[in-house]
Length: 88
Image (cartoon, rainbow, N blue to C red; front, side):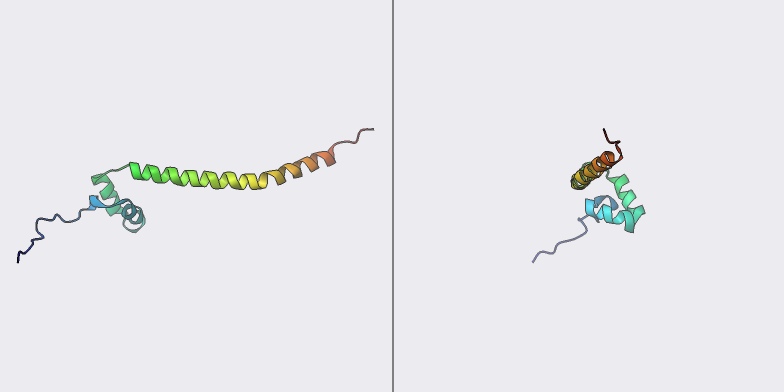
């Protein structure tokens, strides 16, 4: 039976973190996280994450504005009608 040596496997360094580990370590271990970013900078995943969050928030805000918009228009229209002088 052949024995396998683990000495040829390099230890996991701080630069080998995936995106989820980096996000968690920003709060849990910031020094370790920033050392990993310094050792292996990647910008595609954070950019895509920020774009997706921005898109989700934009859709949410636009939907909430549409929901409230007609009521505000009706309220503004009734206020302008009630303060306008009557024509004789």
